[in-house]
Image (cartoon, rainbow, N blue to C red):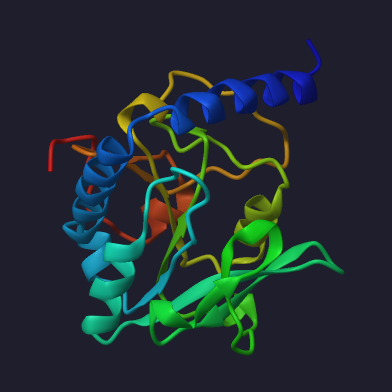
Length: 209
């Protein structure tokens, strides 16, 4: 099966599985996943956070946003530029500033910044499936892979995943970008990633949190 078709098949199955979970389960699991991220050393060490607006029953980031703003961190969300088909990063001062944009996903309306100018930061990205090594299958447009490629070297990239989204392997293309960490309800999995090693971060190794 061609790689593109394999990915399309994975996305269809994984999206159907995710959207079939109970709303109450999604809310409870999302809260636990976000709490696990909030407890991570690399999160505490960063004063800047980039978050995504969830689509469907993707893991929420609302608690992370509220915590970051309350702590005085800089918070950014992506906005899709339909002309260039790329994500730009825009600051937000509250979740009330997010409005429906491309594909109905909530976006900020504030001016964007130069992605490469981000200071030390944690960049949280969505996905349909992940591996413990930081591999990811995204929503399908390649927008986040292009965004990750444009990030400064010190950026720490993080995937938030329900436990059932953590797989042994996922199909990958040459342009797919590995994440620094994958966070589930009970564990943080560090990827064998040069960015993570160069940041001098403590191994969290999938240990329960």
